[in-house]
Image (cartoon, rainbow, N blue to C red; front, side, top):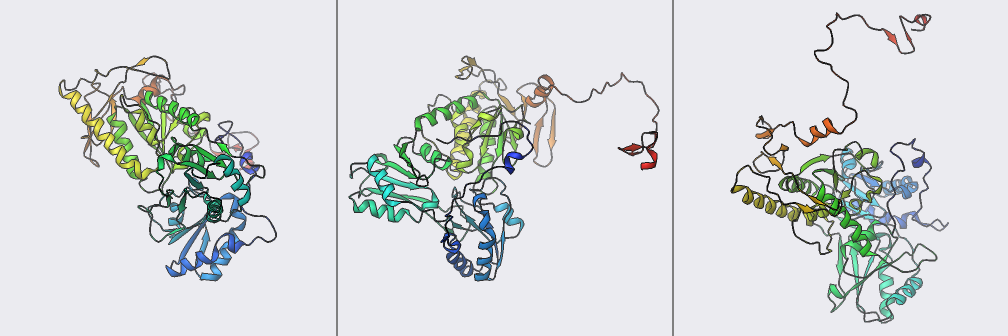
Length: 503
């Protein structure tokens, strides 16, 4: 499996971005038809039918060379205001609604491969491209893996092959493979896609999902990783048609689950958890963040919400007091290999698993934010109810937490729960239980804020940070009359000999 590789150091001169080689995902022959590859005719007709006036085009890096030509063709066919979005806010696989709304766009046309995450505000037209495949070579590779035509198989593919999947399926059916299921994708949505299912799976006839194996057409990237984790109980085989010497490889799902399970164990030991905002457009992301805060608070831990754009080791290293990060993003951008990061990065599903008590992980996996909203809310309610039951016998005594065995440290740990005083909404936790009686009223939220010298952030600043600011030396410095300071500019102050004439 392909692994994410972060920067080798916390600071660089940007040469890696300038010298980076971008692979093209479109044909480079002389017969290449820009209009056909980008489905200009279909896109233009949709724009005219729905009377969109301002059209934003979003290209990934590997297709930017055609942006000017596609813009010209769409403008000539529609007469509308067509413009290209600049660098995406987060990942190129997600629709950048934020940048499009800054230009008051009516619709976004997304080109190239995508995670198909539903949007929340703007309609989207998808043009995946038309990556060619050798159907005979793909069929030969398929037969080597599935020699029995009666084996139920699901055909799942990278979206750039969506035009080739129907001929490939028909070719296999002509050779006796009748129990074939296929994933379908939606190329456009007339409204914001909060409730629209953009990818559907049609099961083989008379075959339950549990009996199906999976054959994936596409590169070994995060899309394949997400599918392998989603269908961890199935056999998953991958074939990359873009490689001339490609062979079918079985995806090591068990190894991936073991690595993610290690991240779950590290999240279980964390007391301070940072919620990294990895999207501003995927539907339900705000509800997921709110429920994550409630869940972390109910579990007696401290949440912080961080908006840092595209996360990298240098950015997240500025928060050493955070012991674990949970990223709220699209399914593909959520699966971050945190080897280069100082702290582990988990998904909302993994964090929910880590906060469960005495509940084993069955291997199921979910990255769809819409499906996680209700699950996280229910888990937060259950933990809050359990905490209320445990504290009703002895009010204010939160020291009865049973220690648990940590697979990370190899010893027993005892959690030190924090105390919330915001009426149970989980929006504020400051300090440990019973450490201070000082309170202040927050007029904006009508909530009580409890301040304590033992708060986790303050304690980290006092005990572990090497730089604590300039020494104030209050009461130790004699009072002196203020004197006039320097004047001029840095290359020549007025008091420096021979430089006054330079000013």
